[in-house]
Amino acid sequence: KGAHEAGAIFVVINNLAGAFTLIGPAPQMVYETVDGGHRKFEVLIDMAAELDVLQKIDRERSFDPDIWVVEIEDRGNRPFIDELVKFKED
Image (tube, rainbow, N blue to C red; front, side):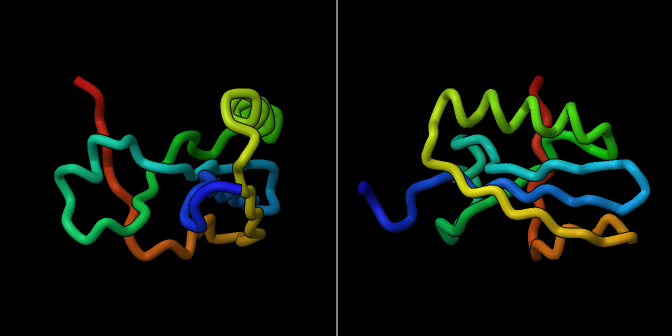
């Protein structure tokens, strides 16, 4: 149901050595400052324990159950996402 482009996408990177990175949707305000209207992503958790990442995903799912989670296994911890937005709250 809903729009085809709806549904937040989260990417989990498993470096196969016990560290996990979580990448998720950038804040809506980033879309207002970046042209193109394409989905933008940011690193939410970097090189942490799997439990930390799973807890964050559970919190996101409780807020909005319409999410997609993709896991990448890569020893180089590469996200394979062309453009990661660096967002810093003031």
